[in-house]
Amino acid sequence: MAEFYKVAKVSEVPAGTKHLVEVDFVPVLLFNIDGEFYAMEDVCTHDGGPLAEGFLNGDEIECPRHGARFCVKTGEPLCMPAVEAIECYTVKIEDDDILISVDE
Image (cartoon, rainbow, N blue to C red):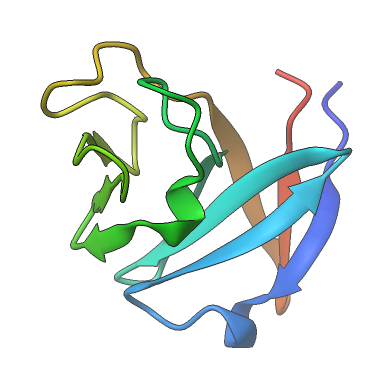
């Protein structure tokens, strides 16, 4: 059974924003897209750059280094130079707490 870690409060991550957290020593980027929460590893699969420094546009995150874009809901690359998906994690909400599991 997956272990979930409390990483933030819902009120700390407004709609349309991203929030960098650490889960079991893994840097994870948390997103609030229209009230739905998503989480992915904070690393561009093209060159290992931190996506937390990137630009969020709707449900896409753009790497600040070379412009690779990824769907925050699925981790799938949307344009070159990235061709590999980013690891995504399960998010659940309990009251005002956001919990993430990286044990998948």
